[in-house]
Image 1 (tube, rainbow, N blue to C red):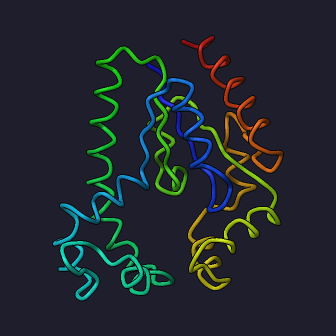
Image 2: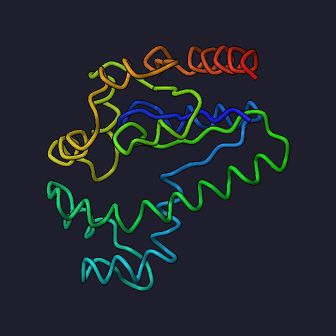
Image 3: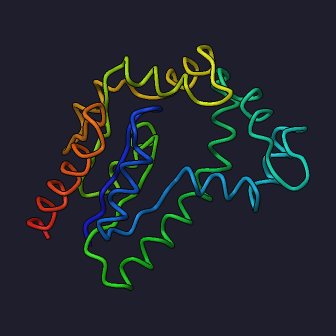
Length: 195
């Protein structure tokens, strides 16, 4: 089974692209969705202990947690030390299920693929990209997003240019959904040749 790492900076269209891989029949692991689930499950008491007051009613309050960690490198490291092992365990479970089902390709949708060194766990890296103008427009159109928050998130992420340099494949979502779908199909054909 070929493992594909799918990544891209905030606002690049990675989640939409992951859905395209799923629609094409790939097993897809969504690291962000896993974090959201963990924030309502086993991570809650661990995060409350490390960051008191950031949980309520059995779930992590993402705004309060963001306020506690964004822009604070040490706090972010403490959070990652809690969350990353839990996310990795869920990832491994999906890989096991995909392998057991006979899947030929599994896609790991990991926003911080390169930043966390996860590219070493995959056979190919796909980077979803778009122009900085498109990225900014998409992100600032999100509810509750502002310029300062966008900059803090982007500062945590590797520059798009560097991600593109490290990629085996690129998908430019700035050219529309049809172009992205054709790119996904092309990548899957190329990967099928490797299998």
